[in-house]
Length: 429
Picture (cartoon, rainbow, N blue to C red):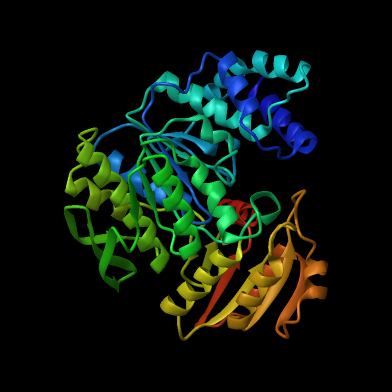
């Protein structure tokens, strides 16, 4: 198969199979492939929000030290290849095809046995095969959904990280914080340390209980990881922190929002713990440099200054609340024109209400995706007075830009898939 045929294979398979959780198929696929995942140093990251940002902070600190880093993330914005990266560069088409074709006979064998691996399971297996070939110093794996039954949970990490926990994917993970925390805490392995940024008392209790049962050392943000001296200057956030016996002063990050300081602090705590074990020796200079260099597309990303356009991948109520807070902190005197599109299985009313309360005007639109929410459905359900219906998001952008003045911000949000379409337009014109 060439790369186009492989991409078509995945597109068709996603429509046919959708999502189906459990580790049996994943374990069988890896066993058929010779268990390529064994023998590497992994960091496993789960959580509702902040997984990707925390992963990128850790990656950049390792890269600043001159080490090799593999990463597996989801979802992708533009290309399937984005999910698998080495040293910050996504896998090329040749390697993507090669690892797929290595697995393809085993995929067909399982298909014939009516145990079809899902698209995400195949992507995960491809990443593990690729990393086994390249043998990086560290591999950072982001869980796709939940943790306990996520296909990434076949790895045995040297460290686990749970960023934060809020209500999302309730049909799959449960409709309480405790239930969702239990699923996320499923990545904790016996005697493997766990670092968490959870702040909800119920979530912390669940994580602590599992860590205690498995004799896993635990560090908790605001208890064992203390952030101090948070300041903002020239769109750089500075903070200091204490973790264990270490103090870090004057750390700087380019990514905006107070939540990013929490994500960065978790990343520093992860590196600090790895240093304390003697597994690695990341210098304080590399920690400073890595944090400052970290950027992550689609996370309060300012793609234009005149007019000011912000793209943000907030796709659940907690993420949207953080977005609203960040807008009000950084641009308190400006008008916000917001274009919103979401997936139908999200809590779109709660998200749109939060945004509508701060917006001068909010456009409901839609994207070309099998799970997309119809803009008309949201428009009819929403009680906002400042709402507009425009099913074509490009026209919504034109309408918003026509209204914008010097003191306004255009915010595009609601779904990472929406951002992918918008970024594709903005980066090719």
